[in-house]
Image (cartoon, rainbow, N blue to C red; front, top):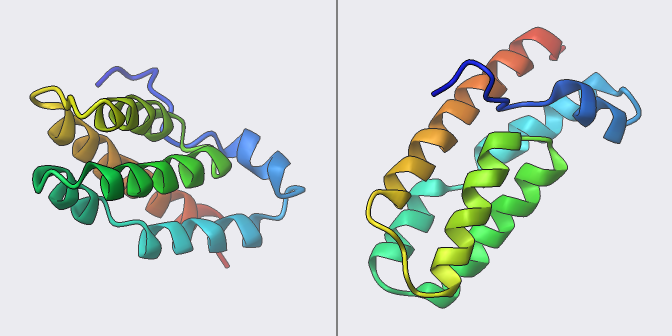
Length: 115
């Protein structure tokens, strides 16, 4: 992936939480523990598009709120495909790679800004 890819827009996110780094890192930790990309991928693979769309929408909303930019873009496209019941080959894997990279970046942010 390109070097200009933004996984976590810390500046934007901190504005949303009134520069409360402790709160932001707490929310990031909650995201890591609550969002389950593997569950979403299994749901998609099983053809349960209704529940998959709900799961994707939840992850998309959390990504937007936490300024997880690249994940938000990827999951948004994925959600559209799920809704259309037309998931493109390779899309689930691409979203999973983006998610995993985002989680790694979140862990760096927590290490830097956490208590």
